[in-house]
Amino acid sequence: MVLPWSKKVFVLNPHQWMLIGFGIIIFIGTILLGLPAASSSGESIGFLNALFMSTSAVCVTGLAVIDTGSALSVFGQLVIMVLIQVGGLGFMTFGVIIAIVLGKKLGLKYRLLIQESTKATTIQGLVKLSFSIFLIAFIFEAIAAAILMFRWAGEMGYGKAAYYAVFHAVSAFNNAGFALWSDSLSRFVGDPIINVVISAMFILGGIGFTVIMDVWQKSSWKKLSLHSKVVLLTSTVLSLLGFLFIFILESLNPSFYDLSLSERLWGAYFQGVTPRTAGFNTMDIAGMMAASQFFIIFLMFIGASSGSTGGGIKTNTFVVLILAMYATIRGRSEVHVFNRKIVTDIIMRALTVILASLGIVLMVAFLLTITEHALQRDFLEILFEVTSAFGTVGLSMGLTPELTSLGKLLIIFTMFVGRLGPLTLAFALAQKKTTHIGYAEEKVLIG
Image (cartoon, rainbow, N blue to C red; front, side, top):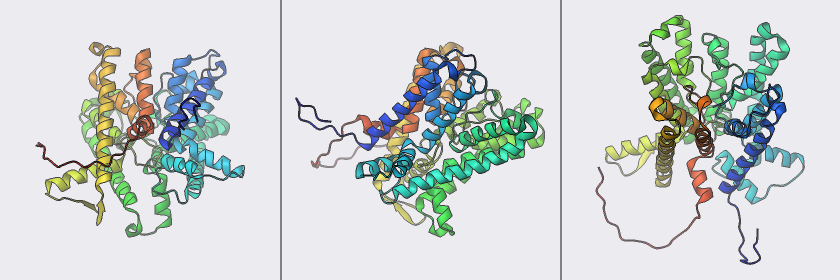
């Protein structure tokens, strides 16, 4: 865009396009969800509630100020499902598919935008990557929906079962956590089929499309990329730790023994893996031990992996910082993993992401202690909700439906930043400056 009086050309960078793109989709979703037809009562749910639900769906979070299953009509639920799919796979993935169908060619700036959207390391093969993302999502969601449909058909008939199956398959693969039951999936706490299918979907969605493609194309662990190895190993370790910690900690909770041994095992497993930004729950989160809730906060903050449908600081970011810390303690000047060196630029980005994310979570938590009357609210409850919003998880201790208007706006902001990522937002808002000036070195005391 050229302003005649300034003669300056304003060119939007990929980060700014991401910011605007997600904002437009959220706005469209807000308008649709604000229509009377989107409400089961025939009356509009209100602009702020519509904005909250639209943001939560596009940012694949799952936090809700109204009950999705009862407060929204079928039209409203379908809008939520479409927003989840677009937000989870990325609006540029759909843009590529539409452009190819219409016979359009993608220029460099569009390829750069796709690269930013998919977190690809190169602009080569981005069209193929977009098709692969679309195909992977369709295949996994179709398989999960078919299994869930047959599981629920005996309880609600094939028509309703098919609808519920598609909705929850889409919600699970995109790590959204929206459910059509008010208690999420608590009624299925000991159901092996529901536990396995839903968790498999959000685990696959959470490791990322590039990892799925890498595993599919290469049959050997040695041939996998460093990114895939780090993601797979870290995801496995965190999932195992999640299951063990939740089971051990909840064993101190008297209400845990209201469940059978099988239900306790399945419940601990599901609650151990769902904080990886999935948002579904089969146990009452508010009724869990405070230690379990705090551990879930830790898992939610880490989140899923880069290039996935999930949020959080990402597993690879967490591992890079741990490796850097280990190297420093051992007196090493370089960071190595799997016989590969991690460059300093990656370490600095990881440190920036973690510090920025921690700063945002603590800032919003502080503000919510003011808006939500901290004297009547447990701080752990507030911190849990904010971390869930930032990690685009969707787990809740019950605070979200009771938020004030200012509280809703703060959580909306947190979900939006969490989906885009603090670095993307910073790059979109900050003016990039380069300097060629070199300065003399001087040491600063640390520790």
